[in-house]
Length: 387
Image (cartoon, rainbow, N blue to C red; front, side, top):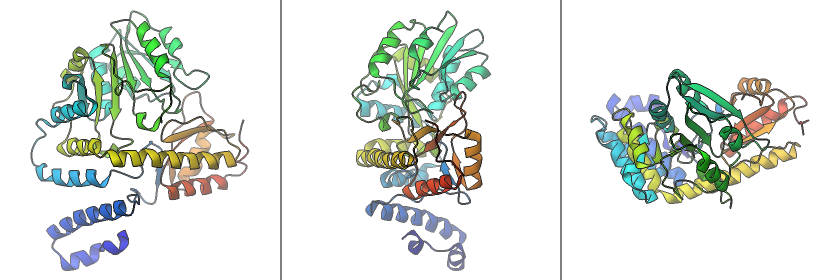
């Protein structure tokens, strides 16, 4: 359908001026979005030379039609500085979650908020404690700020070892980072575990609970978000991102919920005008589009289950995933498989410390996953998996 609706660049140049070409390109994008949504079909994935991206846990379907239209509309204000975009978005998020606006901090992705937390609570002589492996961008930020970074191995269940983390807390500890569900293992820590953990953390230590994959976690009786079921505790910083379920990774927008004093400390260390008008409008439209959100949740659950079925058929035992990616053990090293897939135009997750024989695969479009398994089956003896 998209091919019939789109004109070639040569034909366009033959009929239109350069300005009209740009306008036609935008109209074609919106038309393809409307057509895809009306037929319940995914948006065409972004490809770069035919590469399939299964490496960074993105939403392969992209933003919804409503979000695309909001972005197009906001382009008319691209000549103006964002001014109050971050504050407006924070207020919108607070209203959406029924929280106080002074407790919401908007950022250029959740990693921007991590940097503000590092600036507020770490530095030379201070310590960050994180799991290993986990999403370790904050570790790099902390080290750059001169802080000590202490890593704690995951539990035998591949979740955050909360007791092990508590055992490393001392007078120098300024910040603890917990990704839940954890990246790269996709495993949960229960709400009760986290509540008991936080209760034992010293009052002067801040704990980041990264809920980047919250929407994929399902309706587990043991899991509950600290934003959906908040607690008023200055020790806690709870982060979310629009990069995953909402398909806005390229716009870089996220947010945090924290106690009023903690939120102010983060806000004071944020860059001015750190969110563009396009990102703010897109994020607000994404929050409002609850129908597309639910469709993304259900679609991910179905596609993830199909991926697991294919893995089980090949005698593999993936880790129990509560995210939009799956991690599993192989008889070959991760580097071997990463290279094999890269040679066949598929990118998968990197090798992670202490998990040299595990690979992480993001859930892509159905045709992309079919290609993944076709390339997988090209590897000699790969179906003889370690149990």
